[in-house]
Length: 111
Image 1 (spheres, rainbow, N blue to C red):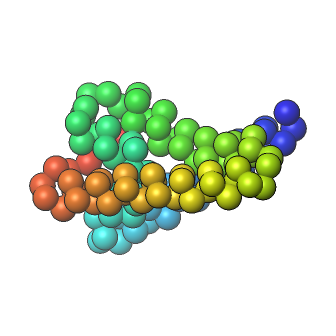
Image 2 (cartoon, rainbow, N blue to C red):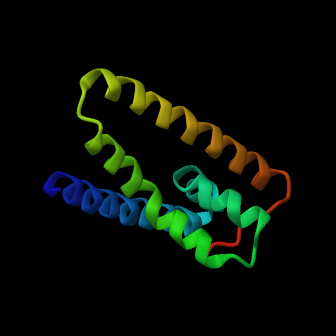
């Protein structure tokens, strides 16, 4: 239980670091590209459902804690070797999709 709570706190810290970095890059003229890469699930929901700000917020603040919590729950080295690349591939596919949609005219409306 301690390990899971620590993992969630680390995930929240990582979320705020990525949010700050993405916001900084957005304000420096790079658009929403960094935010789409760091938080692709919330970007994809924001593309489709612009009025569901609460779902975008839940996905934004829950993504990295979920990643880190899954890594903490899976204790077997063999399973973790499968889980981490799977999460990276799923995240990369979502990020590329979000970048593609943003590039071709569907703008993200972050909070």
